[in-house]
Image 1 (tube, rainbow, N blue to C red):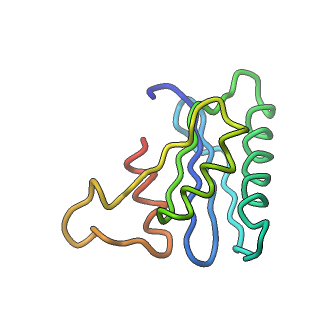
Image 2 (cartoon, rainbow, N blue to C red):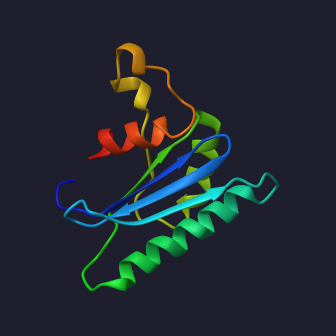
Length: 123
């Protein structure tokens, strides 16, 4: 959506990353955390993401986050989307970098490659 702020949550095997940008597409907040496995991992991630987005919105008047983009493997996206469902006005959007990238970049799903690719495809 042109002129809208947004957020991107990317998960890989070792960590998760959140980027939040404003309506001018300037990244205003970046958060990276190591993953801690356990029964409440997704709930913990959702809580931290919600706090970061609320801090971004309340930090300056007129800011809003219209869309939350997720990039992770299919099972994790389903679990995260379910955890976010009760908190979002609109459903989270799953970015699949592999679907739009050809050649040697196709299939890269580890490290920060999904974050970079999803950011490029989402903007």
